[in-house]
Length: 75
Image (cartoon, rainbow, N blue to C red):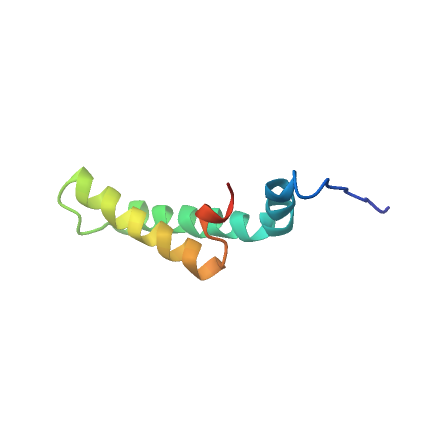
């Protein structure tokens, strides 16, 4: 089976980017879910909820940067 997806450019540039990078975004979500799983299973050193959220946010931004798919690339 073959699938052909067509985009009207430049109007659907964001949709094209999302379609092309979907696997990269999925990978970031998977890695984040594993990070959260590990923190729940093995514990962490965060003393407050704010500290934990800030640490997770830093990890998320690092995963996004490593994926080469920054969030601000989609308008």
